[in-house]
Length: 353
Ligand SMILES: NC(=O)c1ccc[n+]([C@@H]2O[C@H](COP(=O)([O-])OP(=O)(O)OC[C@H]3O[C@@H](n4cnc5c(N)ncnc54)[C@H](O)[C@@H]3O)[C@@H](O)[C@H]2O)c1
Ligand SMILES: [Zn+2]
Image 1 (cartoon, rainbow, N blue to C red):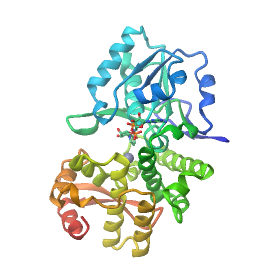
Image 2 (cartoon, helix red, strand yellow):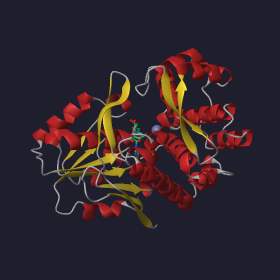
Image 3 (tube, rainbow, N blue to C red):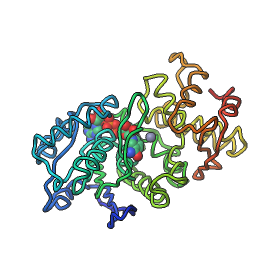
Image 4 (cartoon, rainbow, N blue to C red):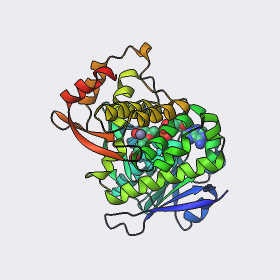
């Protein structure tokens, strides 16, 4: 298997770009950590599946799941680092999915005002194509997602595709929603890779998965390069996420990526309703999400109402006054931002949700 490298420029005087290495990437770890004093942060699943990798250096193991993405966990890691005698000259390596990488980046940026550097081995598809790339790190507080954090890009991200082999299938599928999202935002060719595929035929084709991961990282890298600290353009990456976050909050049933699948379909339906997207493109989007065995609407038996979803949207941290920033599509591969009054969203979603 080949590897390829995508460079993401870093602002803030960081000098060299962040390196994202995709493919048979894990063998590169040793060379990237040469002359460094690494400490690993990981979770129990990775510690169990990859004992040699995660046990190669001193390590801190955190708990599993979104409920662990808190300041309490950050405090636990700081104390463990102190106990291990970790100083500013040390180097942190997050090995895991988006939970591990989001927390590791935050700890690396704040412990002793920032350690000498940090990198990631991104092990879930979602982390490879989204969470680990671009330098947003942080934790949740009181039900608000990612409300505390920093912008700080890792020195490197290894997207090792063979490691996806141990990822639970449901997690793999959830990660695909973010890949579809990348295509819808800026890369119609990436979206097209999914058409005429089922989940099995897509994920069974290693070369195709490789191309899709690389294209997703390219897309994200370009957006981050244009707007590292999310003044404007980077908000496009929230396509499908306004409703995804609301759906996650209201149902407690869906994985993030599954909720993104639904959110993408809602964004497509809204875009069509506003006359930005043709009916046939809307149908293509819903068909691709469905063909990857992802949900395309909120299941009836969740009992969640439209009013509840809209209330959750209104209480999202991204809300500014009575309007929200919403991402729509003017065709596949062309996401656009729109300020939308919440009352308009209410009217528009009447037949959609
Ligand atoms: N910083 C960003 O820009 C950004 C972007 C998108 C998402 N995120 C964050 O990412 C988080 C979700 O990430 P996630 O979906 O990777 O969740 P996760 O880290 O919980 O990983 C999913 C599950 O898969 C397991 N796993 C991961 N890789 C594995 C492997 N190779 N083999 C076996 N098991 C493996 C994990 O232990 C976990 O149980 C959310 O908190 C979200 O907010 C951040
Ligand atoms: Zn997401």
